[in-house]
Length: 567
Image 1 (cartoon, rainbow, N blue to C red):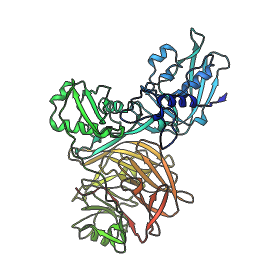
Image 2 (image 1 turned 135 degrees about the vertical axis):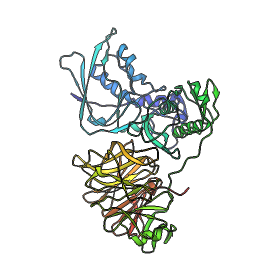
Image 3 (image 1 turned 180 degrees about the vertical axis):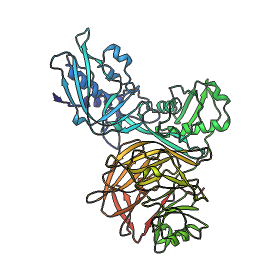
Image 4 (image 1 turned 90 degrees about the vertical axis):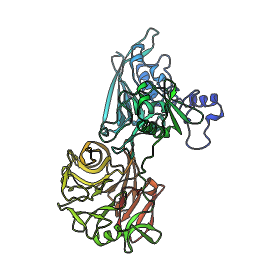
C-alpha cells in the first residue's frame, strides 16, 4: 500500500499558459495552474488544472491514481476527456463524470493493488462532502470509504479501467477552483421574492449548465414545495447558451408553446434566467424559439436587504443605532421599551414584532400596541420569529416538534406538521426574509447541529408544515443564536471551551468558522458577512472586520433582528 502523491502536472500547466500567451498570467489574485485554449467559460475567464495523461507502461495502481487525479481537469468542454483516457473503450462511452462529485482530503487517499496481480485496485478515501447530479452540495460524515476498481490489459498491452462508478473525486482544496457556486433563482409563493437554490457547477460552460438546470431539471427536493418557477412543465432549454461580447446570453428553447405564454409568465421566466446567470458574468438574457426572440422584460422583485444600522435596545430607547443616537421606529419603539423584552424580531414593514417577555412568554407587539399581546405561555420557549405575513412562530426548546404559528390579530395557535422530527431539542431558529426557509440549531444524536427546511404554506399563505430537513453543519458547542447573514448564508453563535464560535454556513456549501472572545450573548445578520454583529453579555456590540471582531458600541441591552425593509 502506498500513499497517493496526487501531484498535478504543473510543468505542463505552465507550458499551457506560455502557449496561450501573456494573457494567461493573472495580474492579481492567487496563483493559477493553466489557461486552456478555446475554453468557453460562459461569460467569465477561467483557469483549470491540467492533469497528467496515462503514461506508457503504467501499473494498475498508477492508472487508478491518474484517474482519480484527473477529476480536477474538466477540460475545455467540461467533459473530463483526460479522465476518460484512463478508461477502457466500453466504459469510456458510458461513464458520467457529473453523476456524483466526491469531495475528499487528498492526504487521506490510499491505494492497494491486488497481490494476485489480477488487475484490481482498492482506493481508500475520507469523504468531506459530495455533489449530486443536479449540483447540490451535501456535507458528509467524516468516515473511511473505499472503492474497488477493475482493470484489464488492452490490445496495446496497456492497463485501463474496466469497472468504475460514475462520478469523480476532488480534493477539498481543488473543489472551489474546479466548481463554482451559483444560485438558481426561483420565486416565493407570492411571486414577490427571488429565492436562491445554491448549486455547484463546473466553471467551464457555466451559462449553459445553469440554464439547463434551472429549466430542464428539478428543484432541490427539500425546497421544491416552498418555491415556484415560471417555466411550464415541458419547457426545454437547448444545452448551448451563447454569451456575446456585451455579456448578453442567448437562451434557445425547443418548445414552441412558449410563444403563447402570457406576458407575465414570460417576464418572470426571463427574470429567473437573468438573475440565475448573473454569477456567470451575464448582464442580460434574450429568450428565443426557432431563432425568434421572445418579447419579455424582467419584473421588479422585493429586496430582502435590511437597514445597515443595527437594531438595538439601549437606555435611550429602541431603534436603529446611528453613532450615539437612536433612530426610533414610529409606534413600535415605545411599545418595545415598555415591554422590556429579552428578544425582539421586527417584521419587514416595521409595524409588528415578535418578542420574548421577561417571564419567558412569547408575545406580539404592533405599532399601535398599548401592551404586549401574549401568544405562547409554554415553558422554556426559544426566541420567536415573525414572517412577512405577520405570523409569529414559537417553539419550546425541549419539544422541537411542537412548533406553532400565530396569525395576525389571532391568539389561536396553528400547529405546524413535521417540525424537526429527528431532533430532541431546538435551541434557536431563524426564518429567511423571503419566508421560504427555516434554519434551526437542534440537538440530534447528542450533537448540536444546524438544519434547514423549506416552509410549506397553503393557498392563503398560512404556514402548515416544514419540509424535509437538510443537515448543514455540526456546531462546535451549545448554540446561543442563529440568524440569516444574507439570502444564502446562515450564521450561528455558539459557545466553545474558552471562546465564542461563529459559524457562517451557506445553504449548500462548505462551512466557515471563526472565533471571538468569550461572553458573546446574541447574533444578528445584516446584508452580508461585513454587517454580521454580535452582542456581548456586558452590552458591547461587535461587528466583523475581515477575520476579526471589532467593538463598535457599548451599553446595548438587546440586539434585535430584522426581516426586511418597508416597501
